[in-house]
Image 1 (cartoon, rainbow, N blue to C red):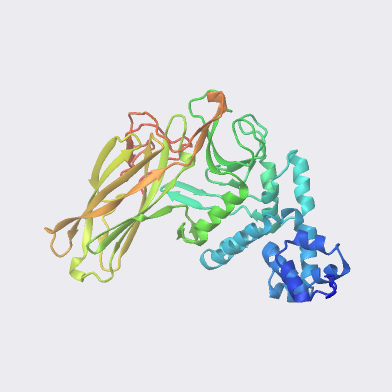
Image 2: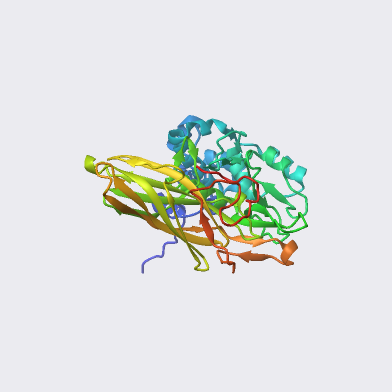
Length: 453
């Protein structure tokens, strides 16, 4: 009769056991090390901890060589310092690294403005100062970089339109704490960004109150018609810090936002907003300006940037000049306005093979969204009697989700891209001449109204 052999960890070969251990997370790996002496020895196997160092702390072979430590010791060192952020660190560190690599090539002067990360004691002191807990992902990001110096251009994007300019800095933790709000309408809100020129900030709600969700990020928008200054509406830009920051970084590093004059401009380009007529291509990108908009009364301000390009392969005799523009502007209610006028923002660009002409203009809607389309009329330089139209593709403008002030509504009221029943429509402002929105007669809330570009 064959004798039975009792299986034991002590007699099993190491390779299959190490393979099994390689599927465990670091917590389970540590638990296994307390089961037996054999598992303790196997759990210390360096390649097992290499995977966790790369996954959670983004450490490389060069990092290991520089520190002259084992992978397990490296993991233990980082965990003792940053362990509370282990669910956030890799995502945020990767976003910061991607952003810095991109800026180093495209906007190198922004790199100099970044501040080194803070320590745990610094963040704990800030919490004690403001009397409120900071979210873990926000703390984690500021362990990596403590925002930036208060300089222009700001890391969080710029926008320029005639005499209006916005550039948002990512505030360091000390400056943010200094702007922590306790006043009615913005209670328990911490500023994340700040613009010197407009006074605009994006805030993060540290508590759920006054109609806001905890950790929600928003632009504040005072109710222009309320007597109570605490009536503050909100254009919502993020549900929590990691989402807000990583989505912005992704838009930057993938070329979603153009780099203009060494600044990140927050124009959004839809790949479908391109039209080619003959040798000329027209493409459009758009942006919503919260600082010039209002929820109550409904007044939504957009800027658009148009690129007109003549193919480099075009024949020289096809050189031409822009004479006029035609716009068909439709708001969310389906109301249509048609606008015609000479040139674009006071210019009559000449297009030759390989030539590019870009300009920015603006429009307003009394609804939360709308679209524009139209054409330019050109004449040939060689023969002025040859006149033709160049299509401008339809492009849509939609304001971000917003929430009305509870002071006015009595309860939290959120609107997401819905339209207002308003008879007023919109206006093309290529011919902007005064400080009022052409046709609407309503000045922008901040008092900063763009003039002709």
